[in-house]
Image (cartoon, rainbow, N blue to C red; front, side, top):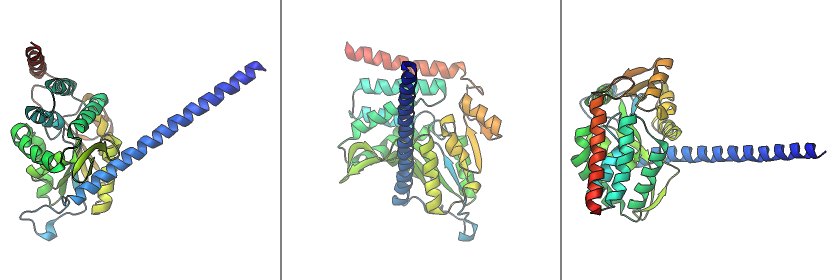
Length: 315
């Protein structure tokens, strides 16, 4: 009888645990969907969804097809939020130790060739802490300056050419990134693209609160954002194309008719091979599934420089 009661008790505990897991999963789905919808709404509110300007006549515009590009290591070398953090550190927004944490995540990103969920959460929390209470207009103005200083020369020429190919075909082109939407819009505007879907930070009366709307635009949230924008803009996702370097973006890549792996990490390369997706690799000093020695040495030099700087600061 005791054994039967124990078994029932264990079953009840297992049932409670399973129910908690389901609730957590539903909550994560809700946050992911909210983040995607908020990002699409922000892109529309920013007025960044108009057809591409240029010499194309209205009859030549292709308004039901579009292209979506990830930013970090797809459109830009390295992580855009790290470059932004470097610019803010130079302006005394936070300490050298904080920047060292960003540098460590950037090092892992460059050597590993893929995003790290813990690192992404760390970037998010740090970014939210240093913009909390700041005017949105101030951060946007700084983003413009920092793009010119630290990002403009880090755009992959090959990926930029792919984006231009879509623009020339009369299609709209959006960036889709975990980077704050304000910074993502700056990058898109400087590249002559249509607009951007990015992480939306909550603001009240023109000042950041230090909270997100939903969650960071990452993984499934990107797919939600693309679908939400497609509904608003009348896009046929079967005629759309998506580009990314990370296996974390498989949900977004799977949401469109054509998926292209750009500078892919090893896991995405495997998925692309399995599903017959195109692969474009614009990296130098790096083989298909591993980083070449020059890149590792370069990343090591960055880490060494940061460590030396910290040691000097302590002395």
